[in-house]
Image (cartoon, rainbow, N blue to C red):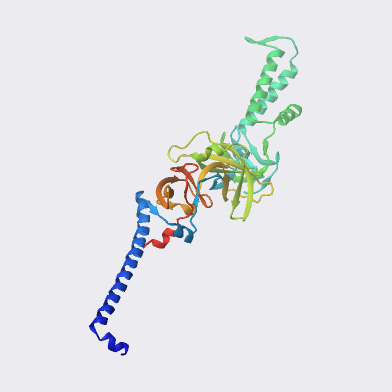
Length: 380
C-alpha cells in the first residue's frame, strides 16, 4: 500500500489535520511570545517618559547588546565661552585737540586721516586776538616790573611798589599759562618784548590722525574739537559676559581672539570689568586690550574671543546611558537586581564631550545601565 492510498483513509486524514493544527498552535505561541517581548521593549520608552514601571533585561540580552552595570564618574569639567566683539580705539590713547581760546585757523599741518603724527610735531598754526591781547598785557606788566625799583610811590589814590608790579606780572603770566601758552613762548616774549601774531600748536602725543573737524581759514571757538589723534599701538574690545561666568573673570587674565579678516589669532588680556550687571540682559561688560605694535589689527574689526573656565569636578554619566527628554530632563535605568531596571529621572547640565554632568537625581555609587542603544531596535 503506497502513502497516497494511506492518506485517503479517514484515520490518517484526521492525524494529518491534528498535526497541522499542532504546528499552527506552536507557531502562534512562539509569535505571541515574540510579540510580547516586542511589546515589553516598546513599553520601555513609555516607562522612561512616564517614569513608571520597570524594564526586564535578561542575561542573554545584556550580552547581545553589550550592556554593563556602571556607576557615575567624577570628571573635571571646563567650559569654553565664545563671544564676538569689535575693536575700538583705546580711550586712554585718544587725544581730542581743542584750545582754551577762540581764533582762526591759519594753517593745518595734519590734514589727512591716517597720517602718522609724532609727539610734539606741529599740527596747527592759529591766530587769536584774545591771546595777542593777553601777551601784550604780559609784556607791559613785565616791563613795569623791571623798571620799578624798591621805592614805593603813589599814583593818585593808588600806592605802587615793586611788590605790586610783580603781582601784576605774575597775574599776566598765569593768564597765559591757563590759556595753554607754553613756557618756551612766554620766555620768548620776555626776551624779545614783542607779541607774536601766530601760535604753533603741537601734538600732545604720537599717533594717527583719525578725524579733522576744521579747515584752513575757519574760525574756532573756545573748547571746540579741532582734531582727533589716536595711538593704535593698543586697541580695545568691549564684550558682554553672561553673569554666571563673571566669577572666572579677573584683571590681567590672558584671552585669545580670532580675527576672520586677517585669518589670525591674537592674544590679549582683560583690562577691566564693569562693576555692575545689566538687569535686562544679565550680563556685564569687560574690556580686553590687544597689543598692536605691528598694526595687523584695525579699529572696527570683529573678532571672536574664547574664555575657558577653570576645571570643576562634577558627577557625570556617559551620554549613551542617558535618554534625553529636553535640555535638562533625562532618564537612566537604575539597576534593581535580578535583571530588573527602573527608570530614574535626572537633571543634567550641558553635554561635555561624551558625558552629561548630573545636577540632580543620581548619587555617587548608584548602579545603572551603561548604554540605552538597544532601545532604538524597538522604536516604531
